[in-house]
Image (cartoon, rainbow, N blue to C red; front, side, top):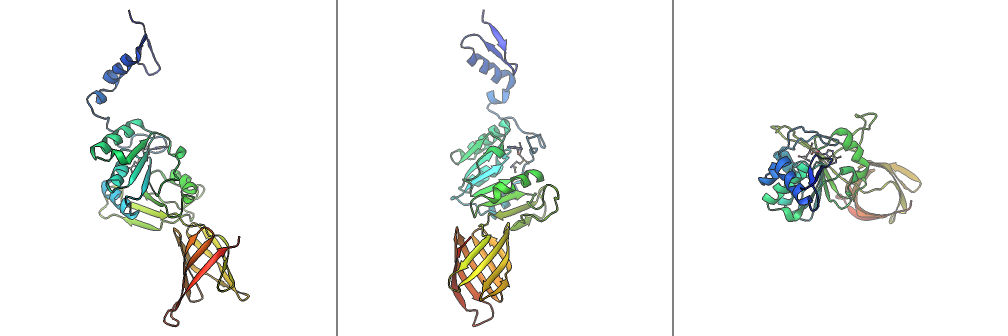
Length: 297
Ligand SMILES: C[S@@+](CC[C@H](N)C(=O)[O-])C[C@H]1O[C@@H](n2cnc3c(N)ncnc32)[C@H](O)[C@@H]1O
């Protein structure tokens, strides 16, 4: 007679070499979908660790990927990837894409969908907590999470590589835990689909360069003093003993633009240098000159 015990999942485990028998029983009794080659279908609104499963409508998926201008050069990570639709759609645009999802049945469904779409080779689904996953290799992050999760992720997202695009279904990154209406990281772009397919708003951010500090402007012997709040830049340009406030200071990824006393400055920031063009608006036929600044502190 073959001895058997019941393990913690209620699966019969049979004596020596019984593992295969146990697995077969589990497959037949508890997981008929696997035997028939099917994967369990999720239920709309089913509970997840920190957010329930609600899928992004395909029209909004396409809009989100277009906003991020996803190309074959990208690595996209979808945080809480559900049934894998953002990952599969990104891969269909030629990108490599990773879905991070805690629910193993959603991961299995995603893998099946990716295989059917012929993109298994460029997609990966990882069954883990999104807060434990290294996001640093991503050039694009997508997400459809709850507001408090989106806010909790904000410091991590803000410190990803300059130029990384982040796109969120519905929730933005304004506010604080204490005050959800407080100013925060405004989206660089928002699109609202009309007619609305259920969820219709997508927000996009590009991770800005970090410019707060003092910069020496080479040719003019002047100093640029900058403060930064997300992509908004304030401060002044000190030249010849005079400090002039900068206006309209803004970062889009590595590109800094601002105005000082009728001159528009544009520069690409690369670590400790910024290089670009200054344009005297309305003077000398909008004369332009090259300018460069080096970080002092
Ligand atoms: C609103 S659904 C979005 C699904 C998909 N991204 C989409 O847009 O169609 C949120 C997903 O996040 C998953 N999730 C919730 N908390 C998570 C966590 N801490 N780590 C990984 N996945 C999580 C849920 O299981 C669910 O599938």
